[in-house]
Image 1 (cartoon, rainbow, N blue to C red):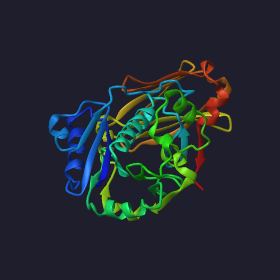
Image 2: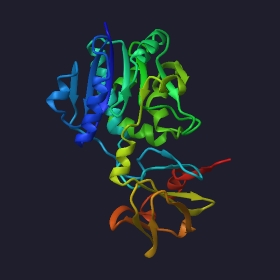
Image 3: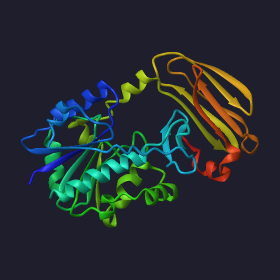
Image 4: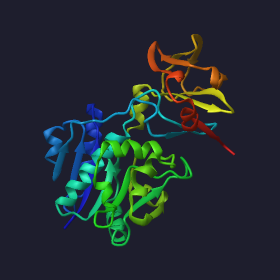
Length: 319
């Protein structure tokens, strides 16, 4: 039986649909079957280029800060761990797409799965052949991405053996998943997402350079800039409440931060970044941020567990 390429997708724009379409067209369909799992209905023209196409209307998002998984951001200061206070966390939505796709493919009789995110492009299909051989031995194969973080992996491509992988990866129980991400000691969503679900950690780690000649990844990054990607990340250091600010867009923006009713304004020119302490963490309660008069985040520290917030919003400075 052929290996199968499993693609998870969320494409609310024509540009993102074209990114997915380009990925599908870069895969050799004579050698590999294609399965797409999406949280939005896909055009018939895309569906017709796949072997299987599944639509899951339940796009689970997390709003509660106490339940959001910890993510990380590489900054000029160091690595900041945080819980994406500015938006709903989508890790459960991705997790559900993956579980849905893998379980369906298992039922259909597939063994070897090459998992891709939609914003990827295959330059040489040989990468699938190389990893297919290694999947005779390992649960999964992933690539380290040390340029981002010492523990980071490349989330865009993972090779999985469905006969060896932990069967828990094929299930999706919302309550169990929330508790899993909430309590896991590992602060890397990608690591949580794949690795500790393998049997006895039977995975193969490969250096990033071994894959970059075969695939292009994160093609949606430019889209973030077009959409206005401004990073405003709160964290606690030495019990001081801090906010890291960075404008990754090509346009200037006005930022207004309100701490306990006091306003702080910034002119965010392209490439601008800074970090500022806003006082004793125990005395900060209401925090709001507006970018060009649009609400970016709004939370009250008196209404959540402060100790938990501190443990989930911190920085590891560059050495």
